[in-house]
Amino acid sequence: MTNWQSFDPPEAGQNRSARLAALRAQMADAGLDAFIVPRADAHQGEYVAPSEARLAWLTGFTGSAGFAIVTATTAGVFIDGRYRVQVRAEVDAADYTPVNWPETKPADWLRQALPGGGRVGFDPWLHTRSEIESLEQGLGGAGIGLIAVERNLVDAIWPDRPAPPVGAARIHDESLAGETAASRRARLAETLREAGQTAALLTLPDSISWLLNIRGSDIPRNPVVQSFAVLSDSGELALFADAAKFDPMVRAHLGNQVSILPPDALTAALRDLPGPVRLDPQTAPEAAFRILTEAGTEIARDRDPAILPKARKTAAELSGMAAAHRRDGAAIVRLLAWLDAQDPAKLTEIDVVQRLEQERRAEGALDISFDTICGAGPNGAIIHYRVTEATNRTLSPDQILLLDSGGQYADGTTDITRTISLGAAPDAARAPYTAVLRGLIAISRTRFPTGVAGAHIDALARQFLWAQGLDYDHGTGHGVGAALCVHEGPVRISRISTLPLESGMILSNEPGYYREGAFGIRLENLIAVTPAQSEPGREMLGFDTLTLCPFDRRLIDASVMSPTETEWLNTYHQHVRTELSPLLDGAARDWLIRQTHPLT
Image 1 (cartoon, helix red, strand yellow):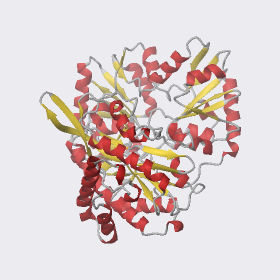
Image 2 (spheres, helix red, strand yellow):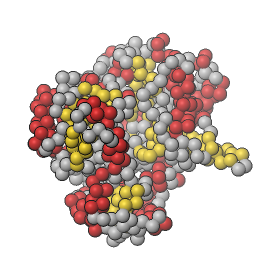
Image 3 (tube, rainbow, N blue to C red):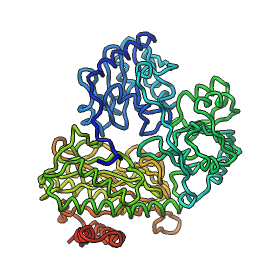
Image 4 (cartoon, rainbow, N blue to C red):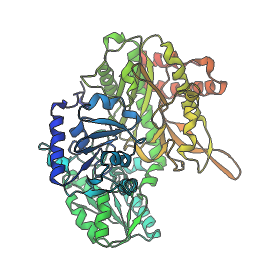
């Protein structure tokens, strides 16, 4: 077993009823009728440190998005379409009721749970201003008040809560970033001056890590330094983080214009800031807004100044991502060649995950970019399935395997999904697999004018599934960081994303289909937004594919594919062969050549 991923099952839930009872006692003592327990930490990151995993500790639900609302008599765990199978396996139905979200809004649920009105407690450090405003608006006229608590009620009943992480920071070399940290600070400071703002509070660790050209080890899979920062319009920056994270070399890299202060100094520093201070209502905690308001400081509601510059990758970042994908592609091909040569009945999901992590490590991966999703048969239908010793399934030649994984390299971050037939392709899977593949190709081939957003092209990936009466309950693509977080905002390909796509942005392209109790299908490549051939006066963009790995020919129904789709697939496979052949030898290279022959 590697040390990259723990396969221990989630903590047994025999004492979760006692935890729920203890929380309700805390609510009664505080005069609260309900309390909200989010998945998020104060930084609003997707992944949280063990010390911040309140939702999992209380309920047993381990997904990367969701929240719970607890009243004196009922408790709901709110989950989106990715987790509706998983939540039923992880939470005790005697204590918690899964709630389909966002179809059911928390305000509507609270109106039903508290028909006579009441007081709903929340931790202002764990919710953004936008979240609280939306909830307040939804509760208007219901006689339900939102009460900010000084100490989180879950923390009060968590006796062995882990300490905050103190992972070592490291320098992210300028050759990989394509710009110095001083230049980035100066560029964002100019943005503040142009807007008439004196300072900005940065709360997203990936924004701060990008800005300072540093990487960290506080959060598994995400090489960020957990911290807050205040950037002034002069370019000076106050970094609020444990000083133990920074050795002398990193301190020298940060320079004299960056000061390191303890995390608990943030509140006082915010009170002393002259305004206007830039706060992003989508990412900054409600507590920051309250601190500045109480101090009488003018607040400028504006986007995190780093979030869009970070999404527009530099030439060096794009080059690093391409190089990382070549090595990652070699690792995946070696894994798939090995898997094809095995008797699947002698392997388990964990065996595949361990072997893949070993192949990535051999290619220089520093970590995996998220816990590998390796679901055989019905486990593949759990969209964000995570194998444990308790759920580990033996493979079977009559099933398909969904393998979604990624690596963190010094020069880039990868994320790839392939769905693999473990024997003869099941008839029931061929039509949806081909529809998913055609959707991926449609996104890959599209050209679009500037100003087009993810919402405008999301349907391209779904059209062939829709024609069969099928669909999937997740977005088609998320932003990806360059040697940073595998899920990076704010750009997405989804029905609700209105942010225009820009050259240099990197996204995933991952349509899917899931048949509960039977199988899951997802295919994913990473794509970079690039300039495309344009007519005069009409600037166009398109996508370049970064991921290098064949698709499983056994699952493709070539008879329904158009000539242009077949041409794209054959060209892609030839490109994969050209790029990866020099990195492979023996059985893996032979396997690659067989898998990349033209589809006829």
